[in-house]
Structures are given as C-alpha cells and as structure tokens.
Length: 93
Image (cartoon, rainbow, N blue to C red):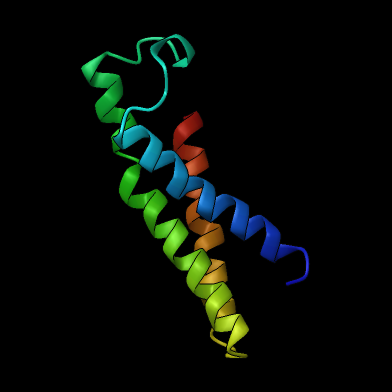
C-alpha cells in the first residue's frame, strides 16, 4: 500500500478535478484537443464520466477502508484498478 496510495490519490482526485474542469468549461478552446466542439466528440468524452467517477469512488473508498484497518480495502482497490484499466483501454481503443 506504500506505493499504491499516492497513485490512487493522484488518479482518483485527478479524475474528479478533470470532470469539474470539463463541466464548467474551464479549458480554453485554444488548449483543447482537435474537434473539442464537435457534439460527437463531446458525447464520447462524457461517456467516460460514470466509469471515471466509479474509479474515483472505489479508489478513495479503498483508502478509507485501509485507514480503518479493514481487510475489505483490498477488494475495492482491485475493483478500482480494473476499472482504471478499462477506462484507459476504452480511451485508446
């Protein structure tokens, strides 16, 4: 857990920050990726929202359970890692 905790925090909090920034459209158009205004691309991007939030929830919840010294943290950590893998695989597919 020594090495896993910082990665979970960066990934999970990073996902939450990304979706807040995306929702409020704080990314300048000049810094956005190509076709950022395309409705199909917008829909594709937002299709990741439920999965990314679930990744964040399970990851942060596993850290919470670890802090409480509950063995069930391992299951939630594994779920979070698998969902993170799925999210990344979908993004590059």
